[in-house]
Image (cartoon, rainbow over all chains, first blue to last red; front, side, top):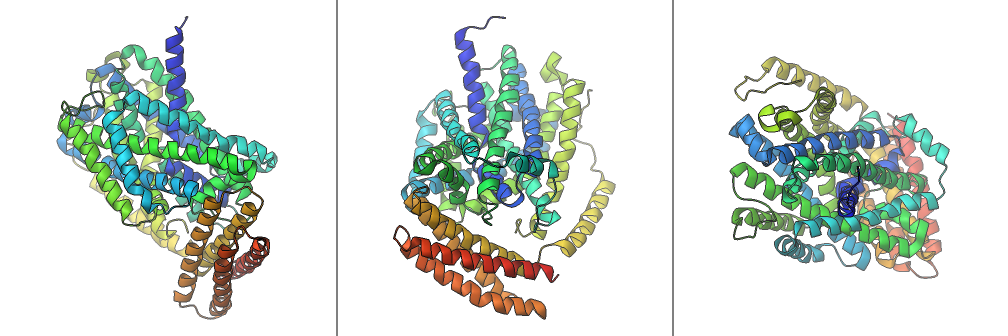
Amino acid sequence: MKLPMAKVAGVSLGILTAIGGFVDIGDLVTNAVVGSRFGLSLAWVVAVSVGGIAVFAHMSGKVTAVSGRATFEIIRERLGPRAALANLIGSTAMTLLTLMAEIGGVALGLQLLTGVMPVAFILPVALLLWLALWRVKFTVLENVAGLMGLLLFAFLVALFKLGPDWGELGRQIVQQTPATGEGPLTYAFYAVALFGAGMTPYEVFFFSSGAAEEKWGRRDLWLSRVNVSLGFPIGGMLAVSIAACAAVVMLPAGIGVSSLSQVVAPVGVAFGVAGLVVVLVGVLAATSGAALETALSCGYSIAQYAGWPWGKRLRPAQAPQFHAILLVVIILGCLVMLSGIDPVMVTEFSVVFSAVALPLTYFPILVVANDPQYLGDQTNGRVMNFFALIYLVIVMVAAVAAIPLMILTRMGA
Amino acid sequence: MRWRQRASEPPARGIEKVAASLLTIALLVGCGIAKDPLAVALGDGSSATASAAFALEHHSSGRLTGPTARTMLDDARRELSTAMEQVSALSASGDRADVQADALPLLARAVHDLHTAADRIGSAEADAAAARLRDDATALERLEKQAASLR
């Protein structure tokens, strides 16, 4: 099959944005924390979460592409308003918490570049986010943030430059047990947190609503498969390289990562100030891109549930409620972060509570993807359902374990 | 496989009870193997002090920008102060009280050294300040291990 150049470019762009879009503040912080305390012994969790997000993002994209309707609209119709409302409340609350963490992440990134206190950046960042959502086209937002997020590959390059003992890193990957001085509960807590960071609910709803924004149809299903099967795994590799950098630099120095400054420091050790600036620009792109995605996800979910017109492709006058939601969630995120709350703490809570909300997000998608009334001949097959059910069990276990582990380990202390 | 979930299906109350019982057992078992708070606080203190030394050393060698190194020092200062508050608030007894008594002056010295180091960043005395912080981190780590072994 010969593909036209424009199509090839579109595919490449989709993959690249999926890579850049996979890593957000939750992945940055959690992977570095885990790397500095457990080495690569939890890398398997990233692999598991990449598989899960790929399976459910594709399913969600497929629902929109085949039925031509929004995921939440169908969930409400299929499961009834009450069950859909529980799904909406759970996933929107988590997405809002993630939005707050992303706004805080942008402010922390700017602090590391300028030395100015992060609270000073919250208002300008919120204003810029709202302006971008108001004025800039969806594809431009997605492509700019995704492509600039690729600067985070500095972590992968830095890992090679640091010249680690590859045999030792390999041993950590297969070891899969708590490192010396770390208890099994802390190990389990971080396994759940890492899983929550990799499978944040907003990514799935953003993926499917983005498919509608880009007017995907049946003919674009292969594009969805390529994006999720290449973009997310490469994004996962990027996440593991963040953990590996922390394992190589911070773990031997006896430093347990607890701030964004410590997350990026290994790149500075490898490449000096120039490398540090590059990775900080990548962090800003990844966090601001994720802030835009989370704000949009809130707007998509609520508007789709309520049956209001939605989408960046519609002007504010055509979709007033949708654009009002975007404004409200950004104001809420901004107000909470202006209170002086620690953005890293918000991030840690957001990844743990994401794990709690996962069943609310993923179960309805699986139900809808099995309904031939909406999917026709694209209804889930046996293989897809086999993997989806395995993931549903993992998601349930993570959701049940998250809060007890959080309490018992005092947030992984 | 095709299946449908009916919204009107009643909840499985038996499963809820089993899940609640398992959760309670897990919590009780978990409480028994949770990490010692004194060891955790000392570990945090050691990590913060080592991080401050790291920031000073790598800023001196031109690998970290001023804003990044200063932010690392500020973060370390906050974390160390929290660790000190936690250690002083603990009501320990026996050998753990001895470790706590040893830890408090050590943490106070680390806080002092960290404040001094923040003033020396970028100066010729930065390396000496970093060395002092390294010593503090090593001493705190030793106490952390001692506290962990007492359980």
